[in-house]
Image 1 (cartoon, rainbow, N blue to C red):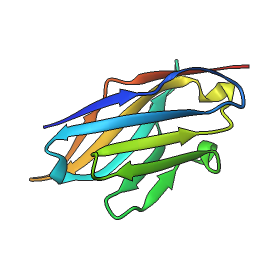
Image 2: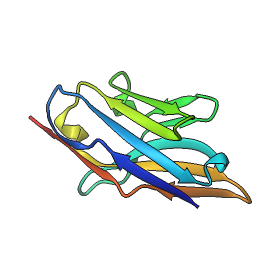
Image 3: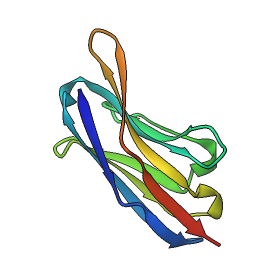
Image 4: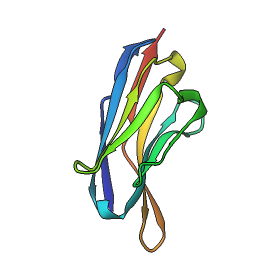
Amino acid sequence: QVQLVESGGGLVQSGGSLRLSCAASGAIFSINVMGWYRQAPGKERELVASCSNSGSTTYGDSVKGRFTISRDHAKNTVYLQMNSLKPEDTAIYYCNALLFRAGFENYWGQGTQVTVSS
């Protein structure tokens, strides 16, 4: 089991910045990838960014060049720095951890609301 606790969401004006944090606890040594997904009302959950243990990163097309994902392995924490925010970035952001033990396991945080006003 892995527990994920997110923080850092809120309300920001268009063009502003926010940083999300997600602290992992539990079976952290089995974590392969940590990342962020988001879900806007009426839309499917989509990948925002992910970061593997080796530091390889992947970004959704809509956030490339604006968002940066990073991991602090000593603190078992993943961050998402969001710059140049747009109203269309408004969504609930979910932290995700992908583990490999007997097989692949997915864990999710409770979600944090990000609202960007125009």
